[in-house]
Length: 589
Image (cartoon, rainbow, N blue to C red; front, side):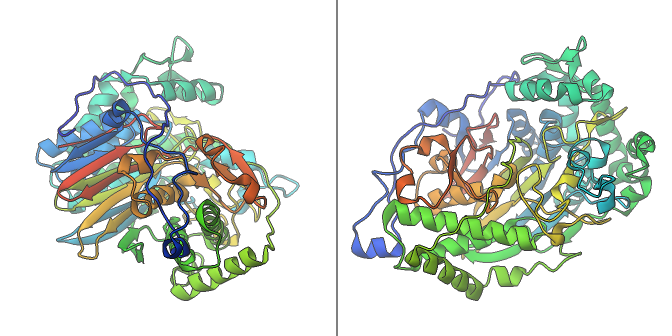
């Protein structure tokens, strides 16, 4: 199917679906040599109906965007048709998705972006939230000195200084072509005219309604009750805020009316985020982290993103696949993938943090010496049968949040950007007069060593709270490039702690098992994050995963929350897939 799809403005209801189809064989190095073991008869086959594929997969030749809402993808198409480039498309979709998925992202959030323009260069942008001046560890301690997990999780003190607007404007100003007014026009229209509330949004509004402050209930309610699916959500105050951004650009986010309203709100909360915090905020521009993986050059975000741990994960798997000591078939593959995930998340817990405040040994973590040494230790464990699993801390809570945008054109110009307000509706507080929901990103810091956050992730002193510091993030926007320099694919995901492993799962099925792009995105996933010591599996793997042969893993089945958004170039075609777990679609032509 080629060409732009036509969807009604009313939202298509989300239907969760995973079905079965053909499976390609993958062998470890030993399997390939002996030609004795395949995964065909053990893994479920995932293909999906034609109707499903027609909605979530699209093929084009000129340009492709994959997002988490049809109207966000449509915003990108709109500016492309006006002569915009991939950066203009990314900018339009970013502002649009902040209107369309306020439970996931917003202008008071933050994010990362990788920009690759083959004829000009490559850049990484960190516009993640930062701890305000008053953001210290003592702020989150009770009188008895114990951590106050509730204070850091929700409410005004859970918010860090936002960077979304500053980052997106900086990227568009440096690399975009169109006037900002043209690029933000779709978002302005969605805010002013409204859009039909879809099921996911209606459900989460109802869920958090009792915790919303009055300003937030006014926007997301009708007749003093939560807005319902199918009803029109109009965000007039957000429209006014967007209008001020068009008029004042980055100045609005330094000393404009919006910032004055946020500062006025915080007067009741010890001035926790001050006007000075906004003035001192700086978007960080740097080189992407580039590493060779699975035959491609991989560009991802340096720390405090988890991109380095995704690279480590992929390199560990590649090294284990060479070793002949691992069991064959599904048992060996399961061990290799799971142990790669566990070790990468162990490193994340120990080293992950803001490199401006702590030493993150990136060079070491992706070096062949380190990879080979660690695989050697895993190999000893496998051969000896001496398995030790960690204790099981509190299980992570589900939190469907964050968003991702993948864009590529036929020349290989590409943007991969993940943005978030952290948890569902962030702090569940709206700043009066702005239409903006506060993030709750302070919870991404380690409140105390060994104490898990919203996602069950633990951290060390490397990710301790400090003024001006950026918290560790799972967000890992990624671009893969052929040895020739041609762009192969753009990928990323929302989904908290499952972001790096979901990207790994997708790339594994696409690049190693040679499945189709849609199959690779929709294939049931596995996830291990070191702590809790649990191997999480999609329900479709029950009956296929060899639990009895892997008794040393504690297995739990449950729907994975991460959603992958990817654009890949195959020959002269661009293929886009928006995860069928969500509501978004790819668009292009």
